[in-house]
Length: 257
Image (cartoon, rainbow, N blue to C red; front, side, top):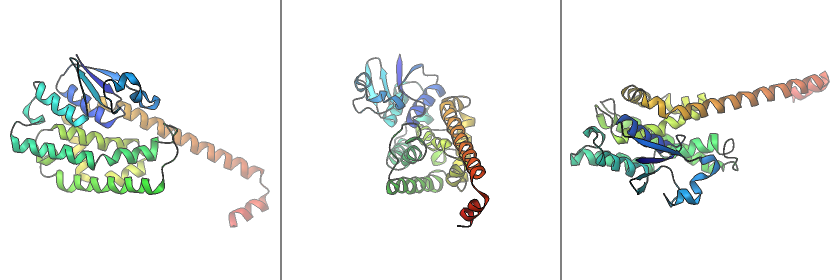
């Protein structure tokens, strides 16, 4: 039995889970709670000494690194050729996308984490402004490359008529932006129509599995939105109470100042 260790909040974990579901590969998801640092516990480090998600065990064989896991599953299971083509040149293009993702589009996760999760969910110190701006700049630059160079005539990456493992890995990175506030999400996807159409094509092609693996992201987005609204409501209430207890002349002076 194939076991996938991960958390569907993790972009690459979603990509591997989606590949398994799309190809009817039987697997068991062993949930690793990132918020509880379970990926750093000895029992998981015995599977992946680097302590990174995802990882798999397949009949006693342990493997980490999402792109490598996807390649491994594509060649050890009976799946359609479009996922990881046998043709050497076509396969090399898929490999180039996987390599590019790790060094470029992966910045999306750092941006989303520092902006929405670092303090709120993981209770870590706030990010340094310079670091955050660098993550943002790198992410937007990678999004531009994805929009202008990799999404050409076909519905999928590199003009493909069917998705590849690269489509899954890159798409699950982009969908992490669903956690962001709507105005922030609009800044990223609003001016990039090809990315939006590509995500819709994947969701349609891989229905209902694409939606299934993103349920945890949707839940996280709903939780954060509710938290923001609650905090906004509290701020408004405090402001109203402050105004009610402040003499009119003082309030006017404060407003004028």
